[in-house]
Amino acid sequence: MTISSSLNASVAGLNANATKLATISDNLANSSTYGYKRSEAEFHSLVIDGSSAFSAGGVRTTTHRLIDERGPLVTTGNSTDIAISGRGMIPVTESVALDNGDDFPMYLMTTASFYPDENGVLTTDTGFVLLGWPVESDGTVPNYPRDTMEGLEPVQINVNQFAGDPTTRMELGVNLPATETAADSDGDPLTLSVEYYDNQGTSETLTATFTPTVPTSGTSNEWTLVLTDSASGGATVGEYTLTFDDSRENGGTLASVTTVSGGAYDPTTGALTIDVDGGPIELSIGAIGDTSGLTQLSDTFAPTAIVKNGSPVGNLTGVEIDENGFVHALYDSGFTRTIYQIPLADVPNPNGLEALSNQVYQVSSDSGAFFLWDAGDGPTGEVVGYAREESATDVAAELTQLIQTQRAYSSNAKIIQTVDEMLQETTNIKR
View 1: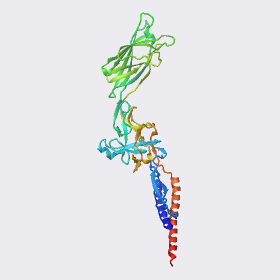
View 2 (view 1 turned 60 degrees about the horizontal axis):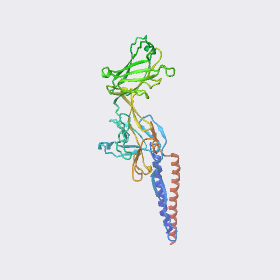
View 3 (view 1 turned 45 degrees about the vertical axis):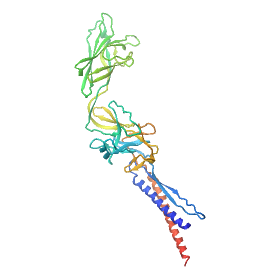
View 4 (view 1 turned 180 degrees about the horizontal axis):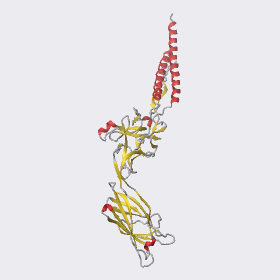
């Protein structure tokens, strides 16, 4: 009977609008929840093919979460608050799963606030741990596979950690007095001491002794450079014969460097390698014809530029995460060490991810397999530290839909009331 199908269709309409109301209420309740992705209910008509008279089929609903929608980013005061400026998600796992060793599940988040727990592991208040690839001591990241979790481990910050940065490179800019290579000079050596740091952060000294070659007449423009290392008991680690140009075009610059002992000099780069007690140091003294390294001008002996890397042992004072997902440990000595890289996971269908509590998602058959990208590469955006992603809920839009849903619900209820009255009229025919 057509009138009965009207009743059934209206009941279906009430249920559909109740489902719509549930999604709106969930969205409004989470309008201040960081990283919340709004839910949406879609209506689909049902058609029942009647033989002669039209029969109302009604409506059904499907709900889904719009995970690919992004909320606005806001700044915070915590360096390990993370958001993504675009596509991509942060890999995390449950802290309780770490007791299983390396066998822990991977979940995904678009934003989170991490703080070190009692073991220094970066963890959210809801118990999810940040995952990343450990960085080698030389700053490189091993070539891990991008379609598995291999290599990912909890990001751990040891707040009481000490670390030193050994010196591996040094640039030596010194002006030698041209008058000292003249026939009437006294030939006394000139000494310059440069501090460097060994593998344990201990201060050591590299001493450069410049001895002029005094000719019987005229000027030689030649010096002997001897390098000694305090960590090696004052042993000589390199000896070189330096000859300077006295032409109008290149006067005062290096003309040639002859290696007597130690690492060979490269005239193109102006660098040589010396082996101190803790290992090799690349020492740049300037290329041939270069005015920024060793020079011989006038009558003044003075360093012009001494640049080196390395630092003494320092105490960890904080961490920061850059736009490429690298976690940097900061020390009070001024030393910065890169300790982890946070990759960004992407799936073909983000809306197909399985949504869990606390704005956490899990890969499913609908989402497709994940791939781990370097932040900013491929389809992924950059990592933003000191930031959180706000809820994707538009309160004004949700309230507008609330009014529409309320009216639709009332209309369906009115149809049920009307059908009831019509059925009553049908019953009255028998009177």
